[in-house]
Image 1 (tube, rainbow, N blue to C red):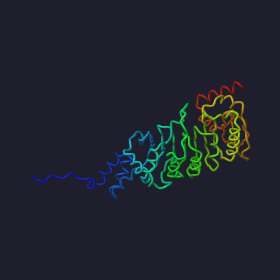
Image 2: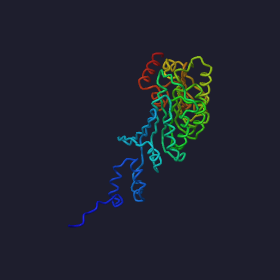
Image 3: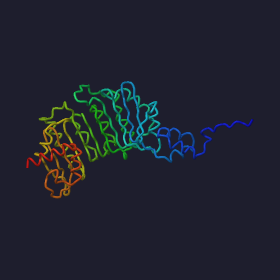
Length: 335
């Protein structure tokens, strides 16, 4: 009898066979296998490390991590592997979203953050960060988190994102004023090109003093009584003055969540404000909202349809295709 052949182990496989294995692995699997040997690292790094979305669901004492690559979605288990994934050299991520199933980012978020303590600051190349909790659902009467609550570590995660890569930030959860100050002091916040804040208080306009971006959306809580509020008037004046320094194409939306009579007020209250020799801030005002965008100061007559095609497109993006069509009909009827 001949000597039985011993099946080759992983280290005995030639690079071309390892290449076939790596081509069928997802980013997490390749990030683990690349550390086996120098050869594995060279083979693994031939493939781009790209993730469409990392979705982190925080629910009670548990958390789940779902990763989407193209049309494939898989679960990261245990959750502690997320740190390994985020430290993959050359990793590019379109979006990281955190969603809490309870009223705040409870203690499980702190546990998750502790597992990320060894990740260097400014090292995660992600384009969009989202923080959401069900506290923003209509009719929710949950209490606002205190400064000692675990979600005060949200600002710590901000600092992990690469400043040059991060372009959009969305926050839909109530935070304390002190925590807001910490978040808005980060380079990541102040250099993001686009920011959306929902279910916030009127003082949210104070969080953008050092922000260098172009696109802003702020929706105050439905509980905020802003119709005849001096605070609301102060906020409108401040945000108008703030956007008069923005470049061409900048857009802003500041209103109460679910505000009414928006279209009618848009048609009747068109206001042009001086911007500079070549630009103007064009705004729509109502009792509970202000919209605006920066357009060329070229003598174009006021009106949504008189603006350039890009401004018309942005207007549709703000209020939706159907509402856009309604506004055109209403403006025509008003003559």
